[in-house]
Image (cartoon, one colour):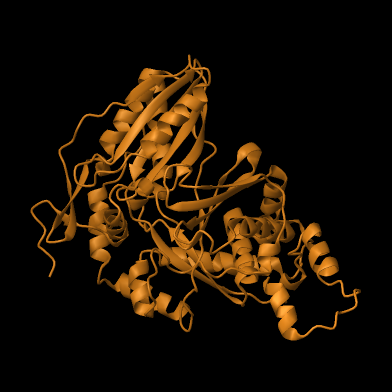
Length: 489
């Protein structure tokens, strides 16, 4: 039986509860620290920047969140408001100012969280030169999600611009307490019943994904594709629980993606989801594809202005017809992803329980495709600010593709896997084959069918069609056991 909440204490939301229990299993692991930074270029006023961050923290109710347990049941409450002004570190005299700032940011990102005493966030400012500043922010996934980071960037730009120019700072953050009230009202409501019915219809007869151990031997033969790639462990060097392989595709391929999206009448994000559906079908086999789709877990205007942990993961289920054009498939994927947004508040844990599917670690509905919203147009009183992601703040759900903006107008792809299964999927092969499918979809002629996609690059085609298929050598008169023994050796 759950312990009653103390006065002022509230239960955790379903999204928070999953993070809480995962963190409690490994209290010193910093894997749930989310972090990133903004490069702000130009004549920044450091006093205004510090005042901006202080005002931002004062507006954000989640900065006062603290957590405790009563009879093993987690609860949260708001602590007294505390003054916060970020420290400014001048590293401009360092031989490599950018490297000095990065060392400090990574060290902070690796700090173990203290869930019960907090605070679970920090902000650091760095001066790299007279016209180059960095604003670094770190927060625990228990109190913020990825959507919160995009809200934070926009709000900070508004506040800084208002302070620097004397203008209006716009609408402040929404209330996290109100968001918790909204989530509590959803439980047991007609809206929740409608959402449950929708997901029940969509997932009827679906089979649970096999997990990270599903790795296609055919796909793992893929070879290099455009873009620079590297593999590492940790959340960009900050957490030992993730294996990662990274690549960037250039502006040319990004522009081809935009063109494909335009003729398909979908967004570039929906076009990229289409590529992910096709790639997964080719990699794992089968025409009934399941992916995990991260969603904000917010539907009301007020909640869209509210930072906090409300994110959810819902299934994207889509069948693949080899005779269908890639453009038509993109339209279907787009429609499916939009319907998912309408029903995004139904908790993934509730859906798994409805389906009777097992929960394997943090795996839900198969590989997750997380297209991180980064606004390239953020400006601080006209000064350009470029956002950089350091950690998404969580272990990989089975297998995860995170998409962010790359250099020179391209895209960056981070393929991550829980380090508990480091050899279950060849991430380098997965990355290479994904980029090959992307290139084939977006650079091919209009109307190309799924069956006509070129899933092998030229080097792989030589191996598969010519070398592996070379039967010109006369067979040796050997028995089947002898051939098997030789192959095993």
